Length: 291
Image (cartoon, rainbow, N blue to C red):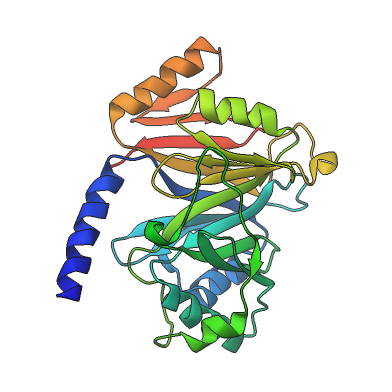
């Protein structure tokens, strides 16, 4: 009976996802493509979905879900804006499976936390890009006011996760996905105007740590920005985060973004149902209609 109920819930959630905006994948500039490929496949369990001479597309082989595209670029990195990317796992037990696997691969776990609505741990890839691995608590267990969503930031002992692990880890489990991108910016207010007036985001909290969270679907948030490194940011295109892909639920939603861009005289290109433009932080966005 329990498995049947889980099956019905999965179907209903899939239908809900089809009507929502979602993060697609991020494109990250890297120096050593071979080393990074090894880390993301062997340590994190992502699969190579496409491979070219200077780039690879990584994601879940189950359903061919893209999450991260790595593109080899020449150093040095002059502008880094990626604070972290968040990979969301469907069950808490998978956090334990992956944490145990990472420790066996001599990968350092930087921190772990319970923020009240999700539980997570953080690692870095070989080129110092932060990665958040997390799962969301069921909404019935979370008390939130989305107009002012402040986290608890409680410590989550990594040993606790290791005690609940289920199985040996070899690949990302089904229904894992890229669900968060956290950016370093010079001005949160400018980003907030852009994400809420041009794009279909809502601000979920604004508190004293100079951070904004932006929500566009049933996830607690999808994009976050902070001003913690604002003095080191320059007005140029970043060399670490090359692009963020978003999926719109239909072509009508994409057309609505085009009209807003034109009303604000923001440059864009629209080819083969792919809309490309840049944020005020010079971060390139690409919007595709979900197939």
